[in-house]
Amino acid sequence: MSTQAVTPQSVDFSAWYNEIVYKAGLCDLSPVRGCLIIKPYGYELWEAIKGGLDRRFKATGHQNAYFPLFIPESFLKREAEHVEGFSPELAVVTIAGGKELEEPLVVRPTSETIIMESFKNWIQSYRDLPLLINQWANVVRWELRTRPFLRTTEFLWQEGHTAHATFEEAEAETMQMLNVYADFAITDAAIPVVKGKKSDREKFAGALYTYTIEAMMGDKRALQSGTSHNLGQNFAKAFDIKFLDEANQLQNPWTTSWGLSTRMIGAIVMTHGDDKGLRLPPTVAPFQLVIVPIYKNDDEKSAVMEAVGRISQELLAANIRITVDKREGVSPGFKFNDWEMRGVPARLEIGPKDVANGTAALARRDVPGKEGKQFVPQEGIVARVQDLLKSIQANMLQQATVFRDANIHDVNSYDALKQVIEAGGWARGWWGGTGDDEARIKEETGATIRCFPFEQPGGNGVCFYSGAQAEQVALFARAY
Image (cartoon, rainbow, N blue to C red):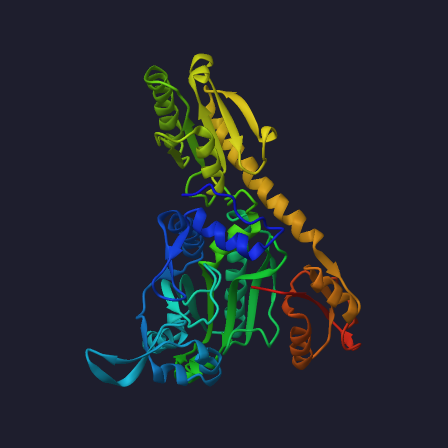
C-alpha cells in the first residue's frame, strides 16, 4: 500500500485513474499483456458486485450454470453478423496436446453460440419455456489498447441467456434485466445511470435491439456499464432451435442476452474517486469501517485494544464489515491517508482519552476534513455507524447525480454539440439522422450516440444535425 500523492484529476484524469487502481490495492500488473491480476481488495469489491446482482437474478427466476471456455469455430460462423462483430477480437486455439486440432477452438468472447447449442437440446415444447440461465465466467477479447478494469484482454462478468415463446416475452425480459442493472448501479454502487436504447450502429452484433445503462465518470466521459439485448430469433434460427407451441406448430424461440462485467469496478472508481484516492459506497465496500487504535506505550495500548476489541465485536455482530489497523511502527496519520486512498467509507479512532471518556472519533470519507469528523459516545456506536453508512451511501449518490445533471446540455445545432463535446460534457438533442451521419459525428468530434434515453420530452422536434423531423432525443458523449 502507498500513500504517495497521485496525479490530480484536474491535471490528467487518465493518469489519476491508472495510479489509483494500483495504489489502492485493487489490482497488479500481469506478465501477460492486456491481462490484469485482481488483488484481494479488488476481488472483494467484485464479490460485492456479484453478490448484489446474483440476489437480484435469482429473485427474478434465473438459475446459474456453466458452459465451456472453448467454443468450436464453426459455432460462431453460424450467425454471420455475430462473428463479423467479434472477428478482430478472437483468440483461437489451433494446437493442443502437441497436435493441430481438426477444428480450431475459439476462447470464449461471449457464449451465445455454445449456449444456443445446448438450448437446442433442452427446448422441445412450449412447456420448456421460458428458459432462464445465467453464467458467471471469464471472457477473452483481444484488445489492442487496454486499461485496468475498463478494457482488458481477459475480464470477469456475468452473461444471462434466456429463451421465450414470444417476442413480447423476450422484450419484457430484456427490459426487466436492464432495470435490474439500473437498480444495482443506483442502489448499491451509488451511480446514477441513464437507461436507454442503443442506435443500430452501436447495438450488439446479432441483436434486434440493445438497451444500456450509461454512467458519467468524473472526467465527464460516458461509460457503458451494463447492456441487455433482445436477440430476436436470429440465434434460434442459426442453431435450429425449435419448439412445439400450444397449437402443436413448430416455432423458433425468441432469445435474449445481458451482461455486466468488472468494468463496474472502473465505474465505481471513476464516478466517486477524488485526489485522495478511492471513495467506495458502503453497500459494496470490502470494509465499511476501519478502526485505528492510537497509543504511545504498552499501558495505553492495553486499555485502547480492550476497548477496540469490545467495539469490534459489537460492530461485527451487527454485520458491519470492519477491519482493525494493528500495524506497528506506522503513524496514525499514515494509516488515515492509507485508508483514505483505499476508499473505506468511515473511520473510527480510539485513543487513551477516548477510553477514559467513553468516546471515539468517527470520520466519514465522503466529507473531507474537520467537517466530516465528530466525537461520539462508545455507547450506542452500532446504531450510530449504521446511520452514518446510510447517510454516506445517500450522499454519494446525490453528489454523483448533481454532477451528472450539471454536465448534460441540450443542443439545437451541430456547432452547439461540438462546443459541448469539446468542453467535455454530454450533449442531448433531437435526432433524425442516419447511421452515416452518426459515423461522421464520431469521426469529427469523437462522440457517439450513447443511447436514446427512455425519458423523452415527448412530441417531436428538428434534428440538430440533418434538419429532419425527429421523434426522439439522443445523448451524445465521448466514451470509454
